[in-house]
Length: 219
Image (cartoon, rainbow, N blue to C red; front, top):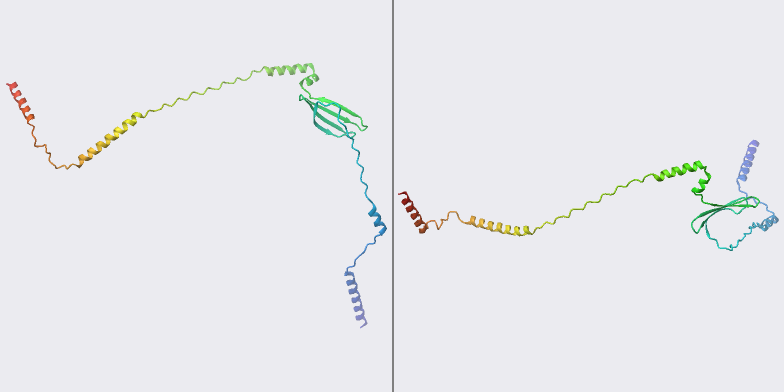
């Protein structure tokens, strides 16, 4: 009986510890009011901006226009500027700044064929000019003249006036022949000819005279 009571007490203790561990507990952090006030009073310092140096306009008016301006004004940097004159010639300005603040300015222009020839030897220049002359002396291709187009024949206008005259006449003739043939077919075939018994006396007289003359000639 005592053992059973011990087991019961242990079970109750374990269950109580389990439920106590499962219960949520709110934890409050301790904050010193003095430190919180000090943090609120700290204001970040704004970085000081470098003073911008303002440049005034040049006294004389320039006769060139700015095309490109790349680079930096700081020490150790380079600045590349392209300008064009009123006549359309381009010039290039290079400003080389070292770490000590010294500046070297280079003023350049376009390199043409004459500048390159000055860098070559005399023999190379002669060979180059000779090859250029040969290319210039090559004959130009002969362009064949385009054939002139042949004049198109003027179409002959046909005169249909005679045909317009003949066709109505032929039509009238065909219509008249058609009605005549139709009328002839409409007559009865067994009807006697009224002129069948008619004897022409003048014809008989002439025949008789011709017979008499023939008899006389026989005698």
